Length: 266
Length: 219
Image (cartoon, rainbow over all chains, first blue to last red):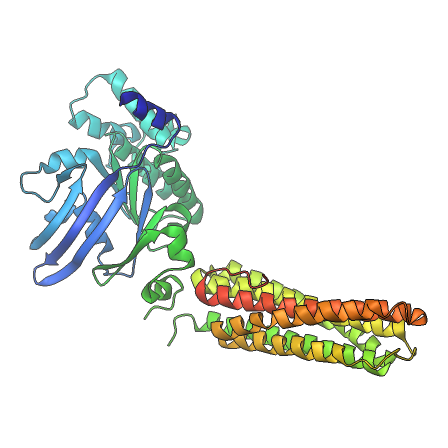
């Protein structure tokens, strides 16, 4: 059995696993239903894009994937989200465990008001790593992984606020990588960045997907088209269409998807 | 109001330019045959000279498509519309080239009296032009059924072509002085057959535009 797995790995034919299986997910903010019967299978080591107009539920959905949504008062859910075999919406599921596996990058870069080094070392320190040598290694590996090492290696002790917006966002990605997550959630990670910084982050995402599963909410449809393997189109809290990005952007099945991606919506 | 009214109006402009190009090409085809039948060298030369305008329109269409791709980032049907505009304009340009070839054949034959009354070639041309009209209407109306009907007619033109060329060649031994004319007329049959093929290609593009699927209707 083991040798079969090894051969499959060598041949790169090993079947990808589902990282998140969402079934019949409903979500309410008080009386308002924000997500309606969501069913999505998100595969590992792929970039999955979530698109849709403002208020369609895409950010709400991504925030259920690390249960950040619970921070909003009055939120109720039903249905299930199976992450690596366990229902994360189950009350017995330890959210702390989930957060070490699922990193998140936000719309605006939000580095801590600390040095570049401390920003990246913060997570591992919280998880009990004290050895300076190991921390140095983690910081370098994470910064390299976020394609920012060469730009900051000579000023690791300077405050992260001195970096440009694009560099701050890549620092936040490095901070995310430092805890060695399984999944990276990105909520409009480039909407506050200039075009060159945006392309750098997009390049980075292509590299990161080899090791991580990435779910990205984006308003930029060309970005979704450029970087993702699959795309989900959300509208009024429902998934209208979820399929290969090539399919969505060439011959979508649903007229509402076509109207949205061609800019003829509303 | 559409959120992309400017883009929509530019797509409409593009289609209008394509139709202008098509009507010039269709007129060139008709005139080339008329020049051939009536030994009208002046008309044949007009067809040849008029081809520059058709080429120019094709270049304008290609330039407009590239500008719209660069500026509007089209996807899905919008992108197919632009892709199909490129392809259809090239098919129309090739049709106009066939008109030029027929005009050149008319010049080759010149004043030389036709060795027999030419009846079947105009009939074949009528079929081909009917296909042109159908394919263009299918394109304007995005009518998949009409595009399919147009393609079905191609077999008739192909059969006529085979029969006519065979007949012409068998006439060479009995009309040795008309060999050059018979060769030119055989070429004309070939050019008309190609015009029908270009119509079929336009029909294929109409089906692709509407459905996103490709069909080979030339088989």
